[in-house]
Length: 251
Image 1 (cartoon, rainbow, N blue to C red):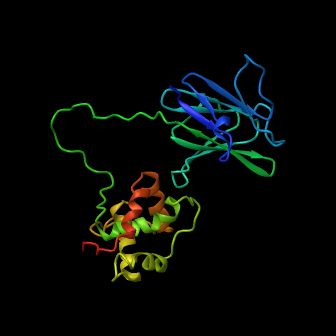
Image 2: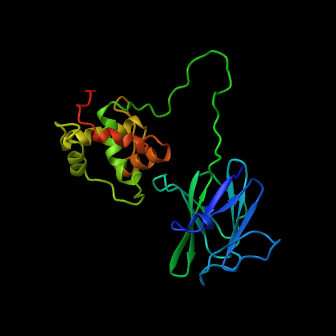
Image 3: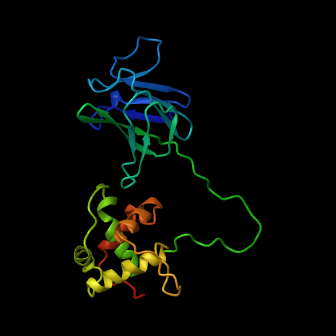
């Protein structure tokens, strides 16, 4: 069974896809494909790409990337991760890549070249090992998706979850307009209150029951979105809640 599939470009025909079984490697760079019997090769015909740019190695449940460049850092993006990415420094060998779908971006002169890597063999545990009875594990981020504060958080994350990882965050006025079909009584004050509440609930700021008010939190919305996307507190399928027309339950 194949472990990963490498697609040279988004528009490449199926015949140009490279399939790697666990243990196989794929060299990539500006040089042409190696002669028969030599290592497998993906040609990237651009003057800004090194002749020996790097190598991909397939395993059973993940893949790794080697960067043979002396000066260029490669970036591996998760197209489904709202800006999630890893950087592979020059000379780094066998850097593990955890994404199921990836876009490898290479600096090439004044351009950025990319190719895709699909890793369909991610494995997940079906049942956690049995343990002795005891107190339940406390939730790290206890969010109730039926509450209005979650609507505000989803609206904050919406554009980045829809494939624009560097999109500016919506203003409070834009959130009000976005939520009005779902929450007719929404206004600036209620949105701002929920943003402040989320900052406390997600432990970005101390709660009102503590004497320590903590440092002033600049970029509160950016901090909330960064935390929510980093730990998948809001996912793309959660955006469906923004389209509902029934009134939200009152907290």
